[in-house]
Image (cartoon, rainbow, N blue to C red):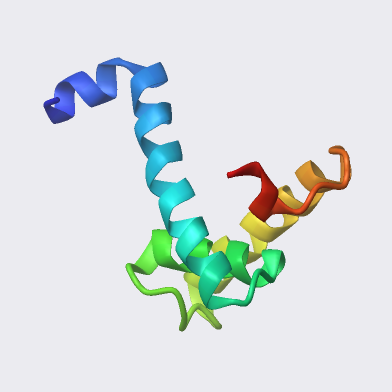
Length: 87
């Protein structure tokens, strides 16, 4: 898939991004001892920087906080099922 094809097909782009994020989230769940919120925080940091840690200040910290807020809103609207069970 070329970058132009990726850009022109939002459904496929969303699917590819979801697959990449799911893979990283699984890694971070394992690395965090299945601590869901730490895993989400580390995955958001990884998405912005390529590293799961170090997003403690500046624009990356702001981004991670926004992701955490959106994720907490999403989780509060869902049935209580540990994230690890969804994979």
